[in-house]
Every structure is written in structure tokens, then in C-alpha cells.
Amino acid sequence: MAASNSPTSCSLLLLLVVMAVTASSTTFPVAGGGGGSGRSAHLTAGFTRVRLTESHFVVQKPYDVPLRERYEQSGGVRRMWVFATDKPISSSHPGGARTEIKVDKIYSSGVWQFEGDVFVPSGTSGASVMQIFGAAPPHASTLMLHVYGGRLTYYHDLTKVLAARVYDRWVRVNVVHDVAAGNVTVFVDGERRLSAAGHGGTEHYFKFGVYKQSHHQPSRRMESRWKNVAVYTKP
Image (cartoon, rainbow, N blue to C red; front, side):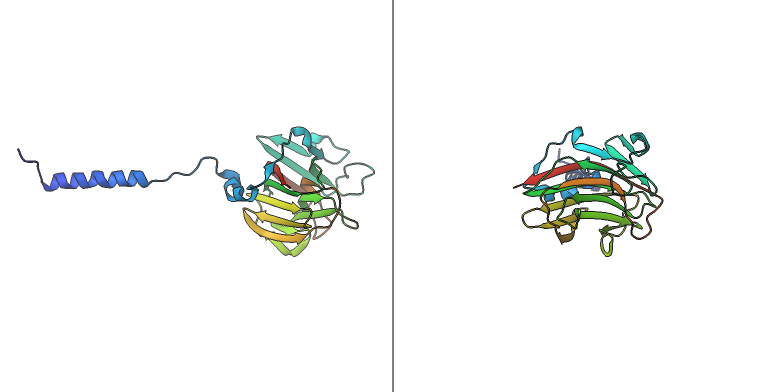
């Protein structure tokens, strides 16, 4: 008996072919894509990740209040906040109010990279959220990233805006410090946003959190949250 060549049979066969081709070409999102790691993976190529334990994350907070009133860690997120009227980290310390984490990994040579995701709640203004501490006098730092009115800036220079809208979203920050070349490069969400000269110095380390600044009318309360913080290096 000859095979049927009816229009119905041909239509059914065509439908099955289309479904098979569609299924084979369908793509699915990669799990775990949040936090910006995919956007900046190329930036750490050639670097070696530095092993950090919890003891390397040293919290600095106003000396007269308990840690729990300025710092919280939950679900991989480190939340730090400070008030403009807070005391410094010690009674003899000349610096302003802050709740920061010092990454206790001091370096003097090579190329070092800081990586992390930062979330700045709306309203925070006039605060440093990340810095490379250590420089030659009269400087104290090699780099500071400030937030003013939702803008991420190089120090307090409002003409050097690295990201225009950082409020209420996770932002991936990568900072590369080439000690020998004396320069710093900042990437925001995987895009190069700044290259600047360093400020010398013989010892450096990374810090992140909130540190009140005296420029452009700082807010009464300042906060930043960080996750996925890592440090990398290469000779």
C-alpha cells in the first residue's frame, strides 16, 4: 500500500521539523549571573587570587559604640553605616566618622586588584566607599571612590564621575593598582572608567565601607553594602 501524501500528513511533518529546529536553537541564561561577575571576569585574567580568611577583614568603627550598631554581616553581604556626628575609630585618631573594613593584606610591589559588588542606599552622600590606603605625604591615600547624590566620583571631584546612578543597585567595582608604574585604573560594571596617577608611598592596602567626607554637604547618615569582595595580584 502506497504511503499517504495527503495535505494533513505533510503539514504534520512540517510542524514536527519546525519544533525540532526551534528546540535545538533555544538558549538558556547561565545560572548565577547576578552580581556582575560575568561582566568583569576578563579583568582578573592573568592574576592570582589572594587567599583571604575572615581575620583579614578588620572592621574599623566609631570607638564609642558597639560593633552591632554600625556593622552587620548576613548572607554574604557586609553592611556598614555611620552617622555624620559619629566619633572616629579611636579617641586619638584624627580621621572622621567611618565604618570601614581594612583588608589586612599589605603590599609594596607588583600589580594588585580589588574586586567587589557595592550597593549604596538612596540618600547616602558625602562618603568614601572604597580606597587604597597608603601614599607619600602630603597624601594619605592612593585612591578614594566617593558618592555624592548617587554619583560615584574620583575623590570629591564632581567633574570625574565614574558612574552617574549608583543608588539602590549592585555595582561591580574593580580597581587595579600597578605599584611600579604608579597608576590606578578603575572599572565599573566591567567598563574602564578611570586611569589616574598614584600618590607614591611604600605600603598599601584596600579599604571599603563608609567614611564621611567634608565636601559637598555630607548626609546625616551614610551606608554601603558589599559582597563578593576579592583581592588578586600578579608580579
